[in-house]
Length: 467
Length: 126
Image (tube, rainbow over all chains, first blue to last red; front, side, top):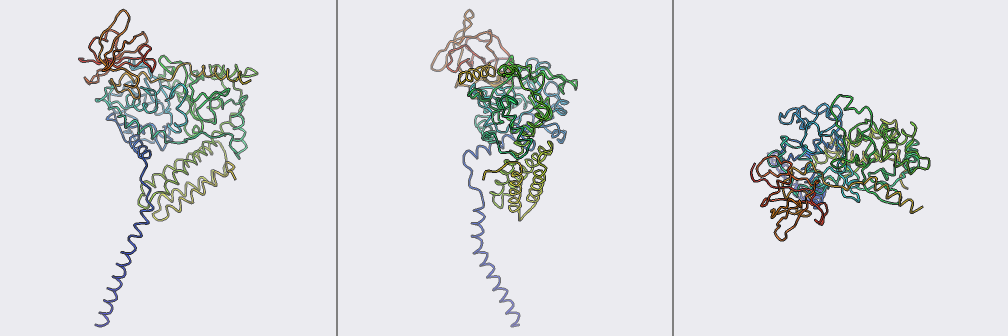
């Protein structure tokens, strides 16, 4: 009896001590968890978050598409045939296949599925069966660096993608009218609603937040022999001449000390023989580019993001980055207004003359700078994931997924050019670590930290870090 | 050398910028009066047509505080805004610019001196 009373007393005593420990520890734990939570978002961050939500979820009462239907985050904010092949039949991308009102003259499903092309009525909506263009979907990365020009904003493939003032802010209005409509009548308030001013502000802020905010400063201390030579050719205004229109591998031109901003050129892409759409026997009227009627010019896209966002050019005419570089050594470019201009300022009257090794070297350079950007973006997502509190698991996992996509791209871009096999191996290690972090309940941060370190090692194999 | 480079730069600029950046015209047609992003009321006039000169090809718009005479050229795009009627907007003609109708005019210049770039005229009946 006394033993049982003693045992009960001890148990009670343990219980009291445990309760006291919890009472003491609880505020400490709460304070620690609170410290782990991110600070409240600033107004700009809140606007970007709102824009992100609109970009991926808002249909504007239309046919079910969102901006993210074509500009997929997991496909570098563009959409490729290989990604399209993974989508279910009822994905809103395919509205022309299952909405009767959109079956004719809204999209060309074959060209969409086979070549990632979408239909645009850039010259008006009066003759839908004959007046249209078939274009690729440009990514929306690094827009902060690529939209401005002395003549005003340049949006879309031909610099005139937005109605109103032509700005990135207004771009969504034109996209809703062109791509979100329930019927070809395109009546606001019936077939869609137009974005409000506040929504346009948020969408613009989100798009400007994507990708690079700054230009590279070339030349970079690259370690790879071929990529380093490619960079030399790229920067040589007498050989590759790439840096004239793509200063620092961006989207802005510079010549004779004049900063031309983002410029549009007629480079003869429309004159390429054997365009995939025409080989497929599908209608593809000639695309006349900027303005109505068009002047044949198209925008200069940034090149840092090029290697993992093909197919290339406004009409998805070329599948590989090597092919895109080789275009500038071909007849179509050299006979174009831009090609003839380059020849006119060349001491030997040549436009761009490159051999196969030089073409591959420039492509290797573009692959390497794309990979460095992949690593930067992946690192950004991993760092953001680390900064999230314990209870923000869903957000952390989403950020880790983004890092996975970037790492996958880096691996594919390097491996596709046979470049830096050592870095490819390390990036595969990064991917494994991110995968483990995504599935870990207790060691997410530790594994993420390891992934960041492995990523830095991979980067160190590609470029000499400043000491 | 510097002047040569500048001259080449200017020639290059002319090559790549033969036309100024501008808003896309095809989707502009479907945007109701007063809703054009970054343009409406900032660079446009919105008001009722007070008079029409068929000979001079001009219209005079009565805005709340000012009357403005607008030159219409062969290059001016005219659209009939039927969005309030829940009907698709149409391409219009000079004859659709009638006294008493509500219009929005965008000019070829931000100072509203040059001819109209486009005119949207509101339809009151189908």
